[in-house]
Image 1 (cartoon, rainbow, N blue to C red):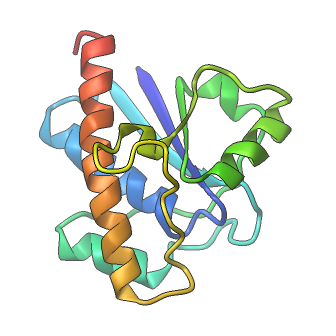
Image 2 (cartoon, rainbow, N blue to C red; image 1 turned 180 degrees about the vertical axis):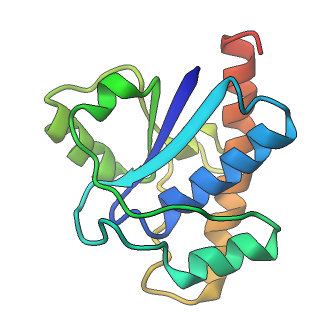
Length: 156
């Protein structure tokens, strides 16, 4: 089983949306028995909470169910997951601090974005639905490329 973990700050906007998008794509490709997906936040602000209602709304717009409760990133996650994908440079650095190292499995989500390699996924929390739409589009195309990478690397 290939295990992918998405990480943002509070685990109520970007990372649960990325999780939901990738889960849906994995199911449609018939790879749910090969790829597991989860998400966490580097902060503990929203542990146990549902995602932001705007996250759920944008996912529903595209027919994607969101089934998640907020969790916090911990050092042990690096041993449980094969790929750790940070939504932005700040969370990337927070993860490195928590783990005490910068492992090869830690990447930026937009490393897989053909339209914005290496950039941050912007945090839509302070804005309106336009920001959530922008984030959805970024995550959707990045998830496609991430899946292509996983299929090629693991001969799926």
